[in-house]
Each structure stands twice: as C-alpha cells, then as structure tokens.
Amino acid sequence: MKLSPYSVAVVVSNRKKALAFYTKKLGLDVLDKQEHWTVVGRKKGGLKMHLCEYGKATPKIEKGNTGILLFTDESMAKTYQRLKRKGVKFSVPPKKEEWGWHCMIRDPDGNELWIMPNDM
Image (tube, rainbow, N blue to C red; front, side, top):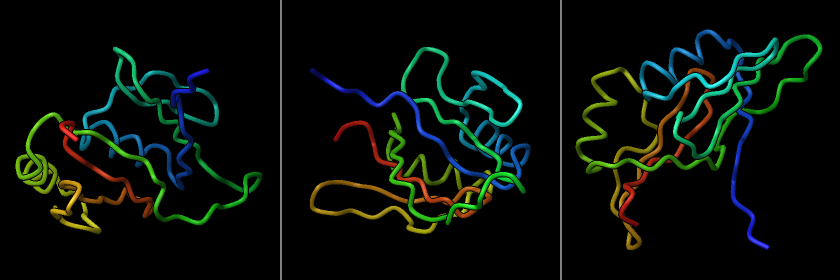
C-alpha cells in the first residue's frame, strides 16, 4: 500500500485574512468554501489545505511549525524576492544546508510553512 498526502488542516484566527494570504500572496486557488473552512490548493491536484477558523466552539491550537512543505518551481532567490515584495514575513530567510536550500515563512496567525525548490 502507498499512502500519499491529500489534505492538511491549518488553524487560523480569521479565515478572510488567511484566505487573502494564501491566495494573493502565495498564489493558491480556492477549491471549496464551507461554513467553517475554506480549502486552498492547486486546481490541477496536489495537497489541499483546509483553513479552519477557530472560535468559541473550537479550541485554539498553538501556532508554530506546521511541517507543511511547499515546493517552488523557480530558484530560491527568485521565490524569496517575489514573496518579500508581497510582504510575506520570513521566520528563516533562504538558507543553504548540506541537503539543499530552504526558507520558512509565517502566515497571519504565526503558522510556519517551509519552502524548498522542486529539484530536491
């Protein structure tokens, strides 16, 4: 059996603000909208992210490193400059490790996302 990632939930405090970040700044598509979540990703497939808004009925989950990895199809330098111009906050600027390049960004709720080039 082979298991493949399909979707992940990202807890957000303000779905409208989070949606603007993930669509306008990161360029993801809106795939579905429900009463308490919005799904973003790529229309042609791949991992889907459920932006789940917490409230009085939903306990607040601690923000931080989500372990979510986003691949970029361009160089890390180009991706960094493009996102920086859009006002994206970096918790780890582009960094070269022995295994390759990566950086980490924060969404409006402080959730961290990893970015790596798709040539790993």
